[in-house]
Amino acid sequence: MNILSNAFGVHETALRARSQRLELIAQNIANAETPHFKAKDVDFKAVMAQVQGGSLKATHANHFKNGEDSVSPDGVKYRIPLNASADGNTVEMSIEQANYGAAATDYRASLMFIENNTNTIKRALRGE
Image (cartoon, rainbow, N blue to C red):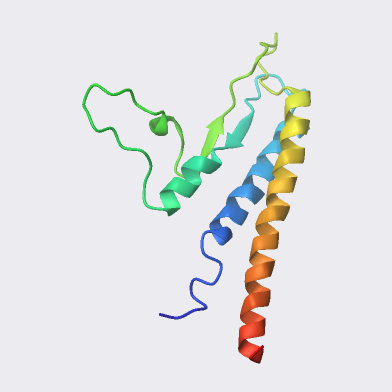
């Protein structure tokens, strides 16, 4: 097994998903005044479930679906607004701003995991 082929594990995918989420939230904020614009977000849990080999499976035919069919393969989904707007826009600025702050923190955390893995590999190659 090549140690460098999977050096970052799931963190590489997590960083891509978090980056995509930041972009979508920024697009939502930019289109806050656009009529009929639908706010989007990334379902991080669904993206990571795909990477880890699947999600929850029903064990009986009468179980309710867990909503996995409503999410696209890249994890993008439409956000359901708390308050309806007259022009059909689903962007709620206060929620988008809060989500952007949380997403930026999550992105930084993923970056730190990758940075720590890189430093560990560097130390191992130097023989420390």
